[in-house]
Image (tube, rainbow, N blue to C red; front, side, top):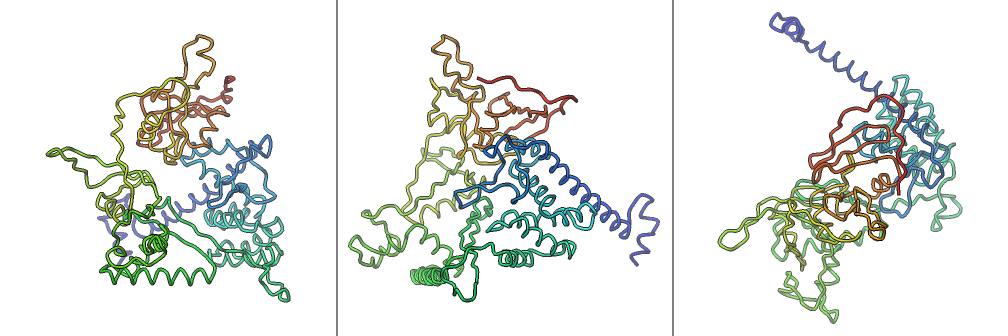
Length: 477
């Protein structure tokens, strides 16, 4: 029946039937895989053109929850100049972090997983599967040696990249044990020679905020701590139900975890002499002798209008943390959970420029820049502006006043922009240049002449560069 419909005259000469459509999609995916493999090769070549001058300028990854940074690929791969990743990222329309990952995966595959690299370019393994393997071998803890990575490469290549995440994790764990890479567990029996890789961690995915205002948390903790935590959550959830809560058990357990984060059990359920608080105080009545438990700072912005001498707020607003929408009712619920200090700041008129004498940036001007830019203004960067540096677009000349010259880079909102620390350093120490063409609108020029406009709606590529050698930057003061 399907074949008859496919061949029917009503389909038209140019229409594709089911069989032809599936064949076309398959061919399109093949082209996509071929181009993805080619991009990996070109990314590795780009890295070859940009070796660091010293190890201090090599590109690295910041590690969440740790005080150190990791190279973008494993031991045995060449180092890469820190700033070269930014231009590659903008050309591809991705962030600098994503460009780091692309280069790191390419180098990991080419130098430490050569069998898998060859299969990618032979079309037997898709690039995304190979990159998933490279991501695991790069960030293995402890780090895989060249020999250990070669073992993983041989095992994965033998199944033509069909290995899944669970099998890959088991393979890496076996490799760590086989090559004696882990530190011995002092609590283990010395007779069995068991090596222990400490898996304990707590990871809060604060960049992945659900529309309901929730985030995911995953952890691996000691067995005793886990049992204690389970007991504490169960007790708090039962107490909430006894006090009249009709919410589901999972919801009450989640709220109990928030109570623990605010030291709720240590503060709200005990009086100043260490005794238990009973009755209405346990139900949430404020205790003036106890400090505020909540120490989380959220920056929410709501539209408001005046009606009968009172302010009426809109039902939805914007939360700076996570760059997400937030409901006013939801925010009120958060604030009512415990003794929360709420600060309402005066409205900042973004249409009114602000300036200050000298180089230092007052808080009122910093807030203006944060509200206007919202994120780092570098192309395709999405780091929240509140955690960024505020940069003088045209450099402030510290010698101008003493030499009787006009200040070329004043501390003025029309000469200030939010830049994350990496892109601030990139602007200061490389050939990248940018200018503010209108309040909150920036035009960037890369070392090779590519141009981008960054505004509140995002990043737009402008006219392509003229053919020829890269532009040589003029010396900076």
